[in-house]
Length: 169
Image 1 (spheres, one colour):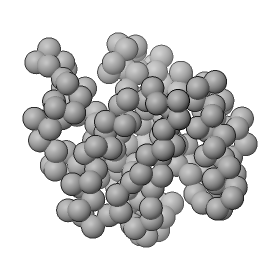
Image 2 (tube, rainbow, N blue to C red):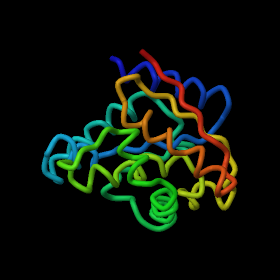
Image 3 (cartoon, one colour):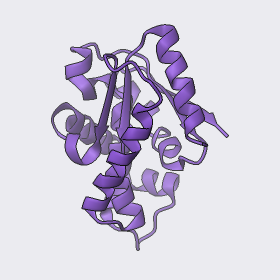
């Protein structure tokens, strides 16, 4: 139920403003933090997608993707841009990583932050890289909230709009 409220509000925004919607299914995050197999994470993401689709989003304006199946091209280029802008010390300071964490956790914030830039989805936005981004999410999605603390520096460097986050308790 906690994640249903942000999705219903997002549906309201899409209906009211006729805006495109991009939904990232972070199947790789489950693999990194919960030590599930890649196959199990992909299966869980497909199940989550069914629940999201059931919210009734406008299918002509909605793009849902799984990281394992989508990361590459322009999306990966933005991941590299983000990675080059964020120091190891900044990531450790934001996320509290220790020397015992594997490199997958340390590099994941760039995957989490890349969808906030429309240039990650050239096939959707056709080169229009300055569309504002609003991210409605449940308060328990700490990784999303922390990932976007990195974005203002990146936005300034690449002349992108700074994304905004709207959290629900």
